[in-house]
Structure formats: structure tokens, C-alpha cells
Length: 438
Image 1 (cartoon, rainbow, N blue to C red):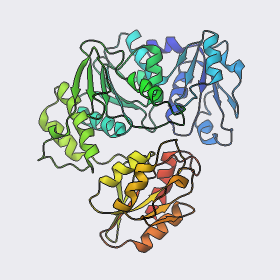
Image 2: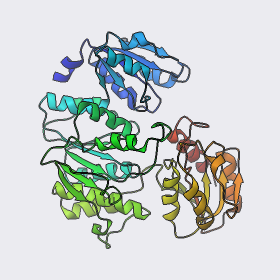
Image 3: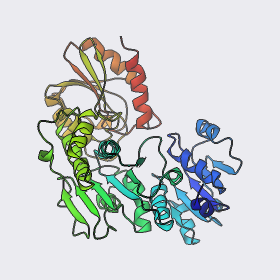
Image 4: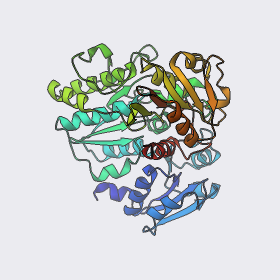
């Protein structure tokens, strides 16, 4: 432990949100190791969170308030560590602020402490409605191949930001995938990553943002809003006209800049845009072109994002569980030249399904629709749509009708919370069923 241990030792911290993905666990364990007095509060019950609580069992300086939030836990604290997804209008966060208690988020707190401790660490932040995971991980792989000491974090499953304080050294680079929720912390801290990528902007999370698309964009904009002269902003073509005047250097990522001779493993035009964004970062950091080419050609689809997971009797099965909006599923469908057998469905996020409904007859041979409020909005009399009760039934029926050369695409278009813990749990369940296919 270094100077950062002194920063956290003895501090009273309320952590809002424990979760089950592992991300929050890393931050909580780190705070406990540094000697902070940690109180974890989550609306889920102790039974629901049992796996996470078990992993933190060795720390005696962690207390839990589960199944509820209490105003008293947002008083007399040194700071609140807010998890992503905490309601915009949370009365508990408002109560903490009314008492003058700082509200932090892990990635932005990491960035603040790196600066406070005078560590010369470059931070690359990647956001966008779609493509941010692919662009983030590709940037990380290119830099690693180029001999850069680089770390991966942010909105990547199983990663946590604060423990990186134990690992980073002068001259290191950190690549963060940043959701709009995580960028709220950067907005509050009035800081932005020195290098930022904004892949695109589409409707999403309107249920969280109360149908306010401008509020959603505002949170996203913190990726560049506080950049300084000499910083870099890479924009996808979709977003270039929405970003106003900025102090940083701006580069528009052009998919045509990706050499045609390169053998790309990723499907779809949208992934060429993601690759173009990663290229601009790599070239800005002067990574050798041969190294970039090799890293791009070796790069496979990120888990749950148009990922080819199995070939059964000449039938290719793709897992695209992270497509949680109608627009994302349209992009997935358009990545294939032939019609596919589509498995989709889930919980409505308040986004129009008109465009998706319209393309189903053009891009699908058959649609198996799992239950959910979003599924109830799907209408296309020309498409062959059949309702199923769950993923097991959907896959069973797809394999009954699929012929050699067919493509089965699992691209839900909606959120997962009616039947699963989250989209990762949904993807894991899908993969488990697929692995049993012979």
C-alpha cells in the first residue's frame, strides 16, 4: 500500500450497491484493506446477495444494511461511494449532499486520486451507446501488444477501479469503459479523461432518464466536457455533429481508414467504426502500424457481443445478449447478409420498437419471442413470430427448424430483469443451454 492507504484509513464510507457482478466487490474489499469503516447498503436482501457477502466474509470492518436504505446511513460519513444505476433523484443521495457529504464514484475517484498523488498516469475513457466495450478492449489489446504498461477497467465485468491504485506506476495507461452512469462521477468532479472516445449516441436507458434524451447525453458528454488543450477526443461519425466546441484536439474516426487488406474477425459495419476509434488512439500514441494490424487481426468478438459460440451441424449460433435496445438488435441483424433465426425478448426500456418491428420480416426467417413488456410491443404481421416461455424452449425450437448454413442469433433488444439478474446472467444461461447442444 502507498499514500492512498493514508487517504482511506479510518474514513467512514457508505457504499451504495453491492451487486453480484464482482465489480463492486473489488472496491469494497480495497476500502476495507485500506482500513476504512465500510457500511454497504443495498435494496436486495441478504439472501439475494449471499454470494457477494460470502466473498467479503474475511473483512471485519464491513457492515451491511440490506433490503432497505436508511437516511441515517447517509449522515456523518466521510464520503458516499455510489454505484452506477442509483436513481437520478435518489432521496438518500440528496440527503447526503444536504449534509455536505461528498458523493463519489469509483472511476472518477480513481482519477482524482491519481492526480492528487501526482502519479503520471494516462487515462483513456471510452463511451457510447454501442461499441464501447469492443473499442475499450481493442485499445487495451493494441497498447499491450505495443509494449505499453496498460490496465483495463470501468464498465467491464469483474473489474474495479480503486484496486488499480495498488498497481499503477508513473508512465502507465488505464483504459476505462465508461457508461453514462459512471460518467456522472466525472461530471460532479469536473474532470474528463485525457484521451476520450465517444463511439456513437442513440436512444437508451430512457426508463432511467425519465424519457429525457438530453439528460442522457449530458452525462455522456462528461467524457470530454472538462478536457484541456493537448487532450484528445476521438468521435465516431454518428456523434460528430452533436459535440460542440471543445478545448481538446478532435479526430473523427473514419471506418475507411481501416485498411481493406486487414483480415477482420468482427462482423458488421459498426465494428469497423469501433476499430477506427481504436486505431486513432493507437496512432496518437505512436504504436507501430504492424503491431496495430496484428492486434486487430487477432481480435475476436467480445463476450456477448455478436460472439460466435458454436457450430452445430453447420448451424452457426451467435450470442449477442448485450444488445439491450431495439437499435442494437437492428445493427446485429444487418451484420448478416442472409436472413437469420432470431431469439429475442425482454423488458421495455421506454424506446420505440417501430424500426425493429419493421425489419423483422426483411432480416429473419423466424423469430422466437421470450416473455416481457418489451416483447409485447413487437408487431409485424409479415414476420414469422412465435412466442416461447423461456430460452430453453426457444433454442429447442430453433434447432428443430434450423438447416445447414442457417444462423441462429440471440439478440434480445430489451433488458433482462424479468427473467434474469442482468444481461450477463442472461448470456451465461444462454451459453449453458448452447453447450448442451450436440
